[in-house]
Amino acid sequence: MIFNELNFYMFHKRKGVFLRNFRLRALMLLGLMLSSTAFSATISARKQVYAEAIQAATAKVNAQAKLQKWQDFSAKFSVFIPGEIAQYSSCHSALVAAIPANDRSSFQRLRYDIRCEDAQGWEVAVTIKPDVYLPVWVAKKNLARGRCVLASDIELKKRNITNMNGGYLTQPEDVLGLTLKRRAQAMQPLSASLLEQPLLVERGQVVTMIAEEQGISAHTLGEAAKKGHKGDIIKVKNLASHKMVMARVTEAGVVRILGSAEEKGEE
View 1 (cartoon, rainbow, N blue to C red):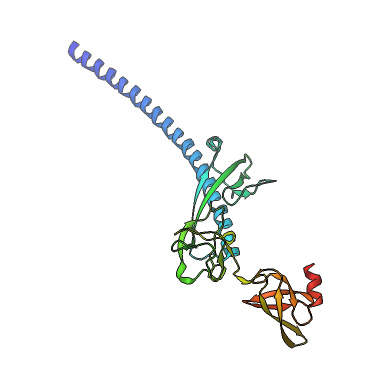
View 2: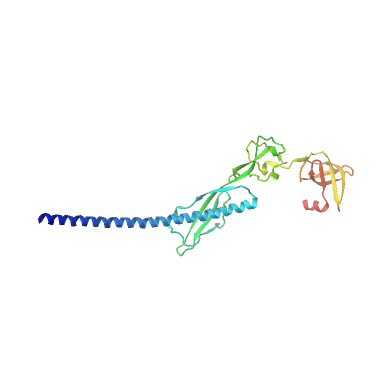
């Protein structure tokens, strides 16, 4: 009898311990669930901001690509979100991305104020570093200063243009037929600052002068007072009248005399 009572006591004692442990574990599990819910909300806010930043930066890059007629480009983004996002709950309304007032950010580093317009809304300042890869014209081999660029001298290579402060060129007409101002090394990207229109007229050279008026053209010879590239306006002395006139260089050894209206426009 005593043994049975002891067993009964021990059974209920173990049952009590089990129930206390069960309640403790249930409370711990509930705490973990609540903590996990809060953590998920924080991550959600961060993910929302990240997605909005990527969308804004992508729109910016696509607009630039359309403006400059980029072909076959790709982009990736590094997004910097401030740590304060950890204290914000996820937003139940659509986020709004705006460029900060008096913003001086460049294409190399974009900045947006991303705002949640809930009743308990928030706003964070986000910085995005884009890396844009685009086929650009590079020198296929070492090219000497003064060389007129030929199709065999260049090729397209994909480069990250974001930090190419010296510039780059994507259209063949911006490269072919132009002259190098400086030596270009193999695989060096070519830029507008590195190239110039070819020298078509030398100082003192006898050139063909073309005068046009009301659909009628006349030719005579002249002497260039200075050298000129295509499109340059130079002074030329008419060898027949010895009169000095202004003329535009159009091709090698040929200039077109400017009309009075054109001369006034160039002043």
